Length: 363
Ligand code: NAD
Ligand code: IPM
Ligand code: MN
Image 1 (cartoon, rainbow, N blue to C red):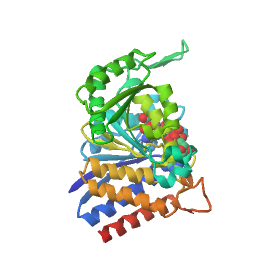
Image 2 (spheres, helix red, strand yellow):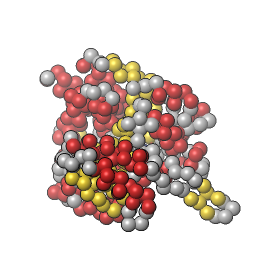
Image 3 (spheres, helix red, strand yellow):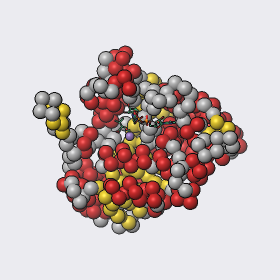
Image 4 (cartoon, rainbow, N blue to C red):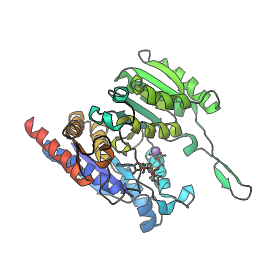
């Protein structure tokens, strides 16, 4: 198997965590006789500084010419006064639109070793295993018109969806639910928004194609509470773009840290892989970043772009083993700082690589 991966590490902790993810992928590829062709290009703030734009044409061309894109994170405080279309985040949104992936899969799996790191009680989070399917190319992020009119002191964005946009992401979510616990929760605000009424009606129509999946609907405000009260009740959670952004970060509370969450965006020309977290300017450059979300994102590349299910599972198992052995980055060591071996970003990456290597030898 040969995989051509474009790495766009971006800003802040993006380069720190993607370095570790790529090193783990290389370890696995070497052992399995697979060829990884890795190319690197700039995106986000680092591209604004060097190329004058958050999404240089060479980055986009390389992305379209790859089998998979791994993105670290974009954004930095020095860009905060820029308008949305000039910011580092515009580079990421432009890349998402160009690659065309509309279904952003954000698994929130609560490793039992991290249950004590959650502010929720262990018996609430233990066993939680949710797959968020976030629509990624519609809603407020891309709807027109959008403007901040400084003269009148008004600003507006447009939440817009077509029936087809809802139906295609719903089909992805139902199919994934069929392979899991066959439960799908669709999240909307249909008590207030027309867009959500279209969303709900379309999801109900699509559900007829999947009679083996149990569908229920939640309003987003209530859902944000149910997620904290009873996370184990949810299997696949289908949401529009902004609701999915918010609820997936909230799920970090269930898993113990935002640094644990991976994502894969499918359905377009080239799949895009990103940890859920951002550039974390508050800890960037200090070796404090948790690389496990990025490393687990690497596993998703193998699963969804390489068809390498067994190899993806090797990475996921290695992460579990490292946690079992008591190794933690600082964000994971809240509950028992003395009882754990607290590692830096690179040390944690190395531990996972060693564990991957050992498990390959023992097979
Ligand atoms: P953030 O996700 O960067 O950080 C939120 C909090 O979580 C911070 O306290 C941070 O230190 C912590 N955190 C995040 N990832 C971590 C990790 N791997 N290990 C340990 N701790 C981690 O969100 P923010 O602070 O709201 O945003 C910072 C910048 O990142 C902004 O410019 C934002 O737009 C951008 N952002 C980018 C992406 C992306 O590129 N995919 C995603 C989210 C936010
Ligand atoms: C995410 C991020 C992005 C989003 C930003 C940086 C554009 O928060 O991937 O979750 O809102 O989609
Ligand atoms: Mn987000």
